[in-house]
Length: 248
Image 1 (tube, rainbow, N blue to C red):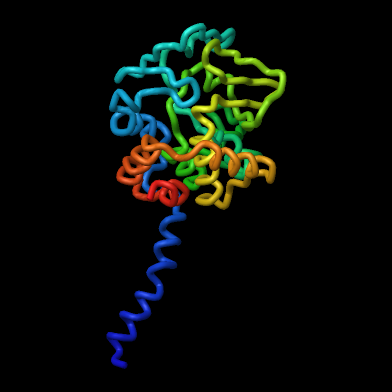
Image 2: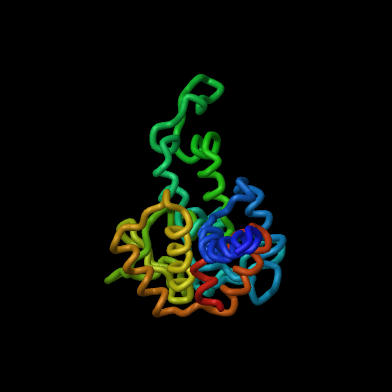
């Protein structure tokens, strides 16, 4: 067997492993959350059939102005009612707290008055890995601003004896937990599974993983999810292995 043939056979044997490694690679191309939000508006949510918020299904226009669902009410954050915001389905705090800069700060995180700070601002300043995770388009969806604010970093679950806080939008928040509307559960599940598979830094609890696996099966992938994934793959450069398996 000549040397060239040996090399060719070796490369062929490595291709599946290389493809798997690439498929599990997260965002490596954009570390700016601000840029990610602009990319969402310019390239992802541009067709009328796609211009709906993730939780409430509220329509919005090219200027990000939202048409609120009937009976929609929000007692807090009323100044954030009229435009959609970029929602981290896997909350930034829930993966950010694994970074030392978020939990404890950094010598580089000092304000103009000489005071040290930590949290999201510090992690964004000192950690490229955090910035890439924060700007990952697969984890970003349009949400009514006040809903985004009230959801905070609460985990998703199924709630008993809870009612919607938002009129006809069946988004329920109680005791620092959130039950999302049925329209969003499959999307949420596959986003969590993508994030856990792609970023070893992020860990799901066993109960959260069990719920996401159940929702993934109960609410199958949609054509819209698959189309969105194709657009993000083109923009960001990496595939979502969870959706790639379900959209094929």
